[in-house]
Image 1 (tube, helix red, strand yellow):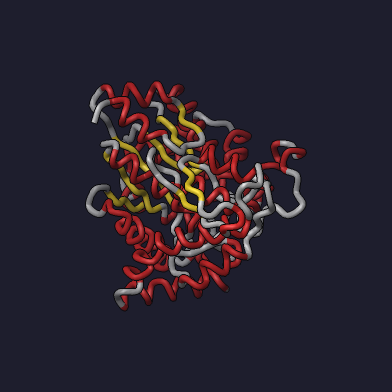
Image 2 (cartoon, rainbow, N blue to C red; image 1 turned 45 degrees about the vertical axis):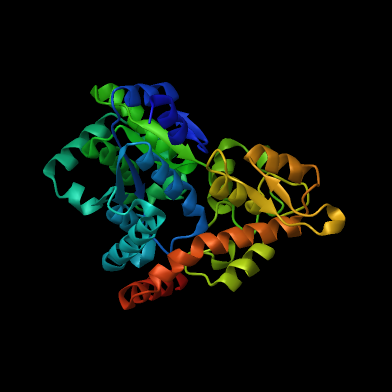
Length: 362
């Protein structure tokens, strides 16, 4: 695979790459390594497919990828009731889903405790803290899905962004992958790296899938930066609200029901979760066809070959919301069924899922 092909594979579908030229130079030099860190905090849901499939792209592009199970980070962030054993169960669950995407044995699974057991980790964290202001760290708290002032009552929250920057240094990776909500941590690493004369990470950010319930009456375009960040935390697909997300454990009929009830106004693109799922989960390859079945009186089925074409056809009213929903539901059930069957194939997996689901629902 030549350099430009690897670059295209690595950047396709990304919201932002900082920077593409740095990434190109990395591939010109033979490639490198990357990582994605995730909080083990619940059942894998459709919103996570965006970064999971991009992780697969980076593996295919030849990067040596690390999947960091951010167990202690999840504990700091009060996930799963702070039960570390349960957090580790959730981490194994996510790794199982990742393996089912066809990359089993092609990446390295790393647990946060593996990194943090090294004394050098804490020395690096102190150097990172020495190079960052309190105001900058507080602004980065949105990577936890937290407001900037939440560090006032629980100081450990302020350590979290420093941990994420330290993870990157200690893993020694060239590329950091994450959703757009992780941007502030990655930019903090680049700033700190310059001060410490260490390697700046190349950041690849993926879109966030909105909640199935949509943005309600909120006009995101009228909000200031602080209010917008708070809105986005509520807006993205959330595993803590079962009705707002589709999980890999959902039966086919539940997936269909959730999609059919999803927010999807005619001709509306912004904040439309059904459009976003179609764009960022299905349209990944250059030759990917997305078929929408329509009644014959409206022209019959239509094949769509790009995100841009999908957006235009829907905005122009060529595609009806119900027809789009049926198509997305069909594609999702096809994607999720083999994953669900693998998860339910053993008693160990079933017990893990029950444990996680029970904790999240409390």
